[in-house]
Image (cartoon, rainbow, N blue to C red; front, top):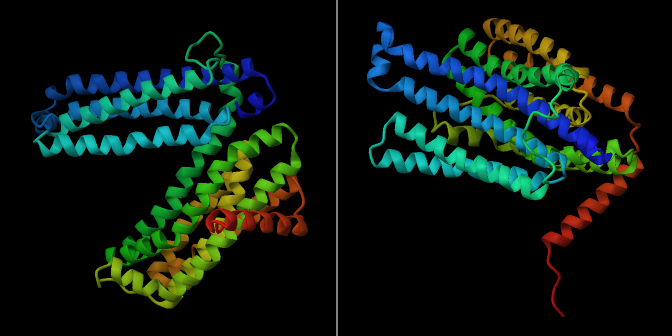
Length: 385
């Protein structure tokens, strides 16, 4: 959609939107029908009697319906991104979550149970969805739900890229949560808690850099579609500069003060060696680097270039972590994580520079200076005369 809007081909962009919306809606209808059927027959199963008495199946159906409405909002969010309104679309999408949480707290505080809390979430989400779609129509009236422009060929053309995109969070969950699981299995739950806490601390910089990266991805896609290579270079260099400005100080802070922070987070019950902090810090730098550059490929819809390698290395790494933890301890398990990020760093950088452009150090330094100067002007107000 971003590419087609950038090219001025709005009918083709609408065709992609309606095709995906209809596809998602049909799958959602099937899921909702199955969930409704399970809810209706749940009282006939003795093993589910306790659930039925506490109305948990009804709450589960409401939460399933809630999740399907979230899917609809995500489709609308893609439309906001395609027309260059990333900030508005993301803000309106994210603002619904705290309102939902407040509604659940309010219902629970007056004695509401599972069903009432789930119903509150659903009502808030539906209202938010109606408002969200209305704002999209007000911003771009040519984008609308329907099936007149939907084509199966559009969905088929997106299948490979969609499956590659789907594999990324699955591989990420395996490499992050899977490693923690296998450490707990091989050593102890306490060791898993230590590893999980330190990795959480180490991944904060990745999330910070991701704030800028996610905001620039639609612009990279649109600029590439317009063949505006200088602007794409500028956006890439700004992202890489932000990566350096965040990860280097964060790495130093994690090595120097990580043990004190771990002691505070664990209420004095967690300790770790400097080796563990150093290894996970190196892991953080590599994962932030390849995650940022990999996002550039994602912006070009070329995630299939590295998705299969990520999936394979995630599976292998899970096995290596278990073997290392079983035989050599927690530090060895952390070291076993490094090959995955090293391989992914080489893979995504290789594909990016091979397929798009060569790195220009002088241009990067010039963009970095302009970026730092602009930030200093905004952060340090001028003195009035």
